Structure formats: structure tokens, C-alpha cells
Length: 210
Image (tube, rainbow, N blue to C red; front, side, top):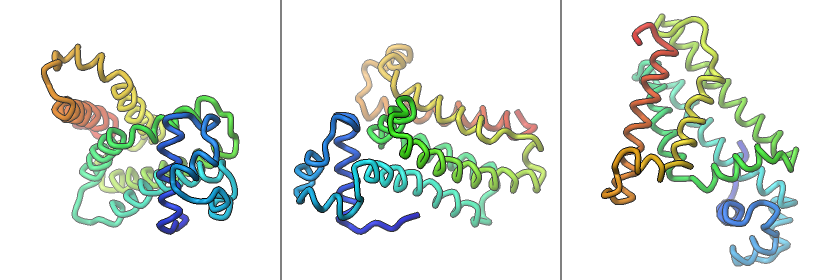
């Protein structure tokens, strides 16, 4: 994973915010520079192009997940299923707190208007899937998990479920009769429901205890 300095991280955060509001094509390099309070030439100096800046956003966000899975793989105090449950909880928290980033990622994947960005995201996500696969193998060696697990489909089950709830959260608010709850209280409710539901799904997929 590339190491970025403070100024680069500031530009990455600024670009993420603008891309989520105006879209990639609707955001100019000048927009980003003005929002960040720097000279336009600095973006070219640090990243080379707007496309490379977008790639850097994904590298930082997805790279943090990679580092977290690597940490869990080295943790001998947790069982494999506890590690899986930790990843579920952290994914839910991450999506709820970084919705603008996930909007960007989904738009880019759906539109496929920037093949270099799409390819970068694919490589980063595949690396994460490989690492999660290592975690699953750990559980299989211990006899905790079933032998045949489709890690990619399992992961996409979580990603799709969480995102579908996020984009339809006002519908779910009505369904759960949660109109009287504050936004913060409602978000806490969603986190709890998503966590319980996905853990039950993963337990059924991974173990013989469902």
C-alpha cells in the first residue's frame, strides 16, 4: 500500500467529498484545488491526473481493510469465527460512516467509464478476498468451518445486504416503525439488525452449527 503524506491525504479527502456530490465527470481538478485551498499544479505534482487521484481514494480506503484483515490473521487470541464477526461489525460501521465513498465506488463500478480505475478497484478487492480466504482456511484447518466455502459470494452477500439497507433506509424506518427515533438512534438500530442478520448468515455458510 502506498504511503501518502498529510497534504496528499487532504487532497484525497477533498476529492472524495466532491466526487460524491458532483460525480467524477462533474468535478474538475480546479474544483478540487479550490476546495483544498491549493494551486491546481499541486494535484498534477502529487497524483498526475484526476484519474490517479480517484485511484488513490480507493487505495487508501480498501487498503485499510487489507491492513485490518492482516492484523486479524496474526491475532492468536481470537477464534476464526470471532474474526469473521469482527470483520462484519467493522464493515457495517465503515459503510455507515463513509457512505459518500461507497456511493463513488458503486457509481464507478456500474458506469465502468474509467477502465483504469475499475481495474485498480478490482485488484484491490481481489487482494482483500484472498486475505479473507486465508482467514477462512484458518478456520477450516481447525475444523471450525466447512471445507467448501465460496468466499467471494459470501463477501458479496454482506456487501450487497448492507448497501441495500443503506440506500433504502427510509423505507426500513417505516417498516420497523422507527419514525419516532432520532437519526442516531435509528442508525444504531440498523447496525444491530444488520450485525445479527449477517452473522447468522455467515454462521450458516461457514459452520455446521446453523
